[in-house]
Image 1 (tube, rainbow, N blue to C red):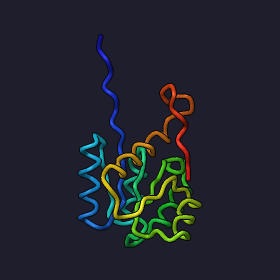
Image 2: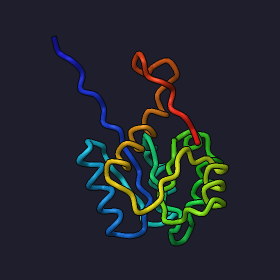
Image 3: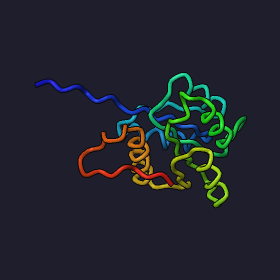
Length: 145
């Protein structure tokens, strides 16, 4: 009996630091995700709009348009407003976390992070895109913070 190969989830990474971007890309590729990326806020907006991903990892401190501006832009457009976003940044002041969540981020992970923590949080973020009732038996709906 032939089974269909599942489609890989595509994660968009918006990160301006080359080394951090390469680390995240490598970890996600090893976890069997497809990865696309942008190195500034406007490049991220274009990449996300041109080919909407399953989920987005978004640095807050980026040139040209910061992560808060990216969240505002994504929220304005129906085809990007529902894509789950995790803010991934060294900015972890309570006001920054609250602002990101208020603007639509579903999760917030502070740098530095552990590889296993990143992959677990991305996996949870991807599950947030699953239609209600489609999670495996015994699973709970993912929560938002």
